[in-house]
Image (cartoon, rainbow, N blue to C red):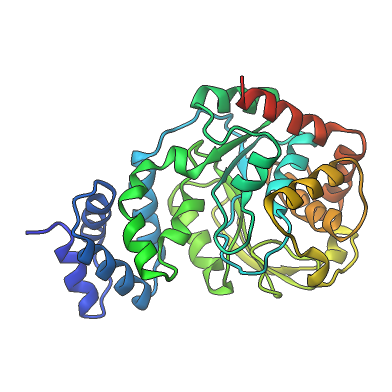
Amino acid sequence: MSRMRPAIQALALGQEPDETALADAFDALMEGQADPVEVGGFLLALTALGESPQALMVGAKAMRARMTPVNAPAAAIDTCGTGGDARGTWNISTAAALVAAGAGAVVAKHGNKAASSKSGSAEVLESLGVNLFARPDQVEAALGQARVGFLFAQAHHGAVRHVGPARKTLGVRTIFNLLGPLSNPAGAKRQLLGVFDRKWLVPMAEALRGLGADAAMIVYGEDGLDEITTTGVSFVAELTPDGEIREYEITPEDAGLRRAALDDLKGGEPEENAQAIRDLLKGAQGPYRDIVLINAAAALKLAGLAEDLKTGAELAGAAIDDGRAQAALDALVTASNA
């Protein structure tokens, strides 16, 4: 009998498969042992039922078991989001990773090509000179020398290729849009994770708790951004070090920053976004700097380097203005190409 069948049969009855059936299904998917029709049926049925924290945990464990790992310091953080917000902004979490590294955090930045914009983290970093297919030892060197390394999903999660054709044919979001940020190849246990829909705040926090995360902020902007926004309110589900999940809202004013219009944050092609990052790191003022500062502030708070967002934003701004953020990018480019 197909390893997928128990899970598919449960889903066909409108029931969530048990953990064993889910594990068997994800193992078959990742090992290329599932029929394409089964893959499509499983993914669609799981989406229709609604992916639970258990399904997210089981899927992430299957990805983690097959990824190409990287050794990182225990305090490393990640700023990877789900993408898919269809807002086409500048690269925010990528720039925030560079700034947070400049301010003293160690950032194992997991990322991929664009999900819904013209430029994802991979495209913009490649335009800045980063080697996307750096070997694990090169990424580890970057983490040591630059305090930031880029972990390109396609280079570290080869098993996901077996699901690619079905996902492309389906043309809709599936659980794999959520699993990537839960599967950091460096095992980062502190995460700033943006989601494309508010409904995923608590489930993703619960999944990270079950996966052993130390702390996390799952965020969603009321304007639809999978980032902490500066256009208005951002909704947060925070996983605290004691395992509690707290829900609250934050605003730009909490970080001492001004509000912006969404149009002020619109990005473009990879080279345009790369130039925006170059300008940012040279000290350019404006809405892009502000939204990067508030996201870097949250990263610094998770890293234990800032007590609150206002302090974090000040530390992030100083790292830009004194050149440490630019130095982090320069060291990342050098180490990834060594």
